[in-house]
Image (tube, rainbow, N blue to C red; front, top):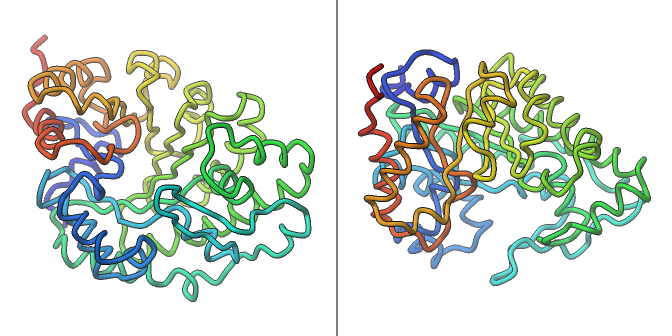
Length: 344
């Protein structure tokens, strides 16, 4: 039995004494302990060494003490397994030397054997579970098919992902084939993560907001929904679409256990758009963690009041930034633990 099951109870929509809290990218560059390991091992080496990935995962549990851990890995291990070369270039970020630009390129993309290509992730989960010793739940994750597609076609990060969008509109048949291959791989991958021991999964649609509402339905949501349908029977699924507030009504009709919200959508509107029944997660502006701890705590309490303490998971509206002081991250977590509902 997991000792602190607040996160899992909130995912089920149960009444809780306070909402649970964790932070996207909580195992990362804002922690000095993480930076020490970063200086010893390159990025994908850290992902591929189960003991290192597990240590990084557990660091924030020891230091800032959130209510859930999220496995240290990267969404781009999936395209690597699919025969798409991905590098992590210092100062550039993800770099794909041979991006997908034609139907023939799509033919060369495979739906892999997960055990053979991504077995190291499953080993990291098992090591992490041992280190956590049932203290808190462990979250597994994957990028949405559209977000993986963006990197695979664009070849690197982008402010517009214009080449990825252009491929959808000029080669729609090939684009949909690639999106389906990514979807099929992601379903297999997340199912293996559940078997290995994760307690919930999150789908990150980091670039969904690049699409118009109509194109979002065609090129992103219908593929995310396939993943939700395939996983919902075996584990809680959280869907986080950055900039995708317009899709919240449809997302709320899915089998997802919770929906993530970024800071551009208020808690009040998020409840309105989703009908008030599904658990929501979010949505503190990561840059706001540069405010003083006193201001952070005040704003976190106001945020909880707006969302309501039940059917709610406190989080940031995107990943924690690398230059955030650790004390400010702690203040964010502590604010939630100190929260007391207003008496009616």
